[in-house]
Image (tube, rainbow over the protein chains, first blue to last red):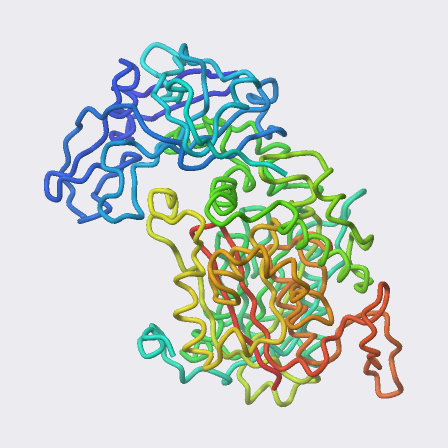
Length: 169
Length: 419
């Protein structure tokens, strides 16, 4: 069944035909993070797709994945484009290298899962928290609940990390 | 010679057999905007290109265009000019389309489907559809796969590309001041381009003190959205000899070369490497020349960073040394290899890369449209004095390279030589 919700004033939908995204967000709604594992090459992929990007096999199964990783890169938005985000600048767009499957199938790959920096309860992070996060920061997954049945996976700080790299002029 | 040079993916026999023979454009406009439809602007630009080539409507029988559903289809514009088409196609796309469509034009001419093809782009990119994502398209509902990006406020080009740019700074120590030099140099070039929208030179401090849009991008790291239409004409080298100007012969084209999984290209690294890493192995072997032979580059400057990343990955400098390359004077008029002598998207105006091809065609004619006086023979008497407001013709320009950008995961490229 289609998923619908309103997040920060922005309409979000996943329609009936989109069975991979329905499954993915179905797990997220229960605050469980699952990804597809190929039944052939056993590699996990993100985001959901209909075939395996490594071996083209169609069959996969949903497996639980630990929501833990390290910031690979980021953007820090000070001028929001979408009306939904204008009240929330600066906000961070994060790419997290999951600990699971990092460096596979080659050293250049990782499951790089997107999300915003949020507080542990899933609200977009305040400016003083944004100022603490950069490349190398350890992160754990949190969820922003949008509506019954629809939650977005997000990222929150996993303690204070050493050696974090942040943009400077 | 790299191993890949013996392994080119496309045949070399088309090199120098096709040419760009005509170019035309409307003004680059902001403020009140163009006040015209994309159909009217496209008609004006195509007409100007046909006249520039010394051709008539009946000489053109093919047409290609690209848009983001924000423009007018080519058969309308052909009809308005009395052109009967044997071939047309309108594709979805923005940056990096031009070079790819030149390759398609060569292919359809070689296939005997038509003989002379116009490629155009017409957009009210300031007054109607803002590619930067502001305006009406900023608040559209988010569905399906877009929940993995737009739901995170990850929508505009600057937002989408920022992780690549940031990671380059992290990996190689590239500084904001180095990258700002792309804007500084292009602003100096624009000062010598009467049709450029922003002709006032800026400094590194101006760039770094402009307001932050999306780290690492300041306002002046971002290009200017304009209303404009541009057109170019592709035909065979044989027919080119009957046209008005020295032809720009096409030596090599790369069209929409991709990194793996382009819609989620960040799954594959290094993310500070862009599609040109793959494109270089097609571009240079087919051109029969290398980056060291190129006199002028047209590396797409949607942002200051995009110019740098492409110059690196196409081999104009070592990977990681782009910050130095773009800031050491190489790219200036009078430098070893000027880039975007028109001022580019950062200063001249923004029509998804086609104007950068037009600029290099004019450079190869040795007849770029600066403020130098026009002689009795109708050609400009270039002074090669590159001080502000002066000449922008590169002396003895023989070979150019356009490096078109769509996104970190996709790009196109083209090498042209003076005919």
